[in-house]
Image (tube, one colour):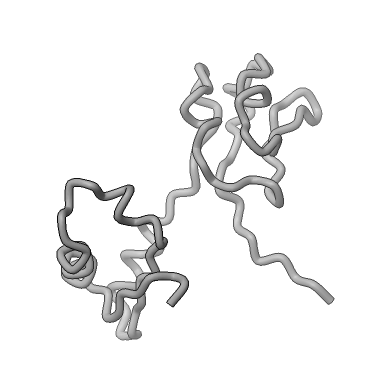
Length: 118
């Protein structure tokens, strides 16, 4: 039996959605469809790129916020690992040395920092 542990990354605030189809047209993976008169994200297709959040003129799309959950983990006595994407140098071009980024993440309270594919 296959279980899906994929968390919903983007939510629709139904009162704000005006069904303008902008998010539907702009989603690169076609992960938004109109259901019951609202533009809804198809969780299993969503790649979390945030494009729908950027293009929604009504502010009806909001991303998952996990800051509080991360802070709770960091306050616990458990050992916590941060797994960063292999593309992190492209995202953090202003940080010249990857060791500096690792140090910054460790300073936040993470015990281990590794690149995902490692």
